[in-house]
Amino acid sequence: MTTAPTLLLSRDDVAASLTLDACIAVVENAFRMAGRGESPASGILGYPTGPGGFHVKAAALRLSHDYFAAKLNANFSENRARFGLPTIQGVVALFDAENGRLLALMDSIEITLLRTAAATAVAAKHLARADSEAVLVGGCGAQARAQLRALARVLPIKRVLAYDTDAPVAERFARDLAPALGIEIATAPDPGVALRCSDVAVTCTTSRRAFLRREDVPPGLFIAAVGADAPEKQELDPEILRTCRLVVDSRDQCATIGELHHALEQGILGSPAEATELAEVVVGKKPGRQSREEIVVFDSTGIALEDVAAAAAAYEDASRAGRGQTWDPSESTRPTKGGDYSRLLLDPGLT
Figure 1 (tube, rainbow, N blue to C red):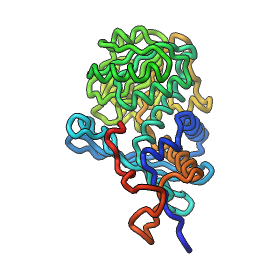
Figure 2 (cartoon, rainbow, N blue to C red):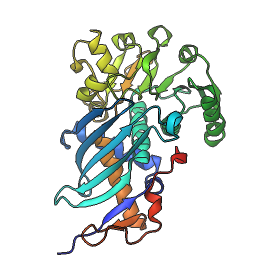
Figure 3 (cartoon, rainbow, N blue to C red):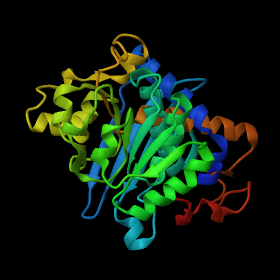
Figure 4 (cartoon, one colour):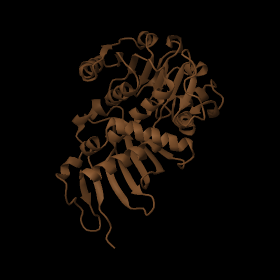
């Protein structure tokens, strides 16, 4: 019996195969399935090193096929300054969960950017005020660009304040995205001042110290806290979580590596059970936004369920379109079709 070859997808291939709108749809469906109990629990393994660390995240979903995906990401926050490399690099392995066949290996950067932004859009759709127009973006790297584009898909955004500790990065963010999205974007030297006049805030930094304070949070704010994906990372004053409604992508994961982790560690919250999971909101087991004044925080650590949903969608579209290269390890050590093998090598200039 001949084994079907494995599809190899570069970052360019993934970008061509998975639109942001499609990713939002499949990620919302994954949360819906989780809320209905139709998906098994996902897992995470962390391995810290001196200047960074590695995460392995894995999950399965029954979609058009039974899929299993494992993503191995390296996360080194000083890479850009030290080596000219992206902060996050890695690979997603997608399998047929019925027979174990390796369906695809794909670059993880685009998957991670899109699925993280898609989760924020799903949360904002259910938890932000529907007429939210003003957004604070804290941290203006590649993830911030995807986040703002995703938010603009679900909210009527008109004004954005961009904050970054590296002011030229914020200026470039504003210069690039204002014409692309057709909205007003200005830089913000003080995140607290910007927060006080915002309807929505999204934080996507590598900060290890809280930079958004409780006293600056206005009534009705929706915060998507994206940057804390390791125990030492933190963007929010834990006091914010004392008085807000907290929604998480995963109670267990956020209690270990998210903003919830810090609130539990300081005794501000007594148990992960005090948080609502986004899947519960998506299926209606728990309510969405309950008033205009309610403050809601979405603690987003990035769960494997999002990865398998996004990877499966990218794989299916790439297969239909004939993108990527194929590799049969039983016959050859090199791809056999689909273009230049060097495209599989990461281009640091892409981030």
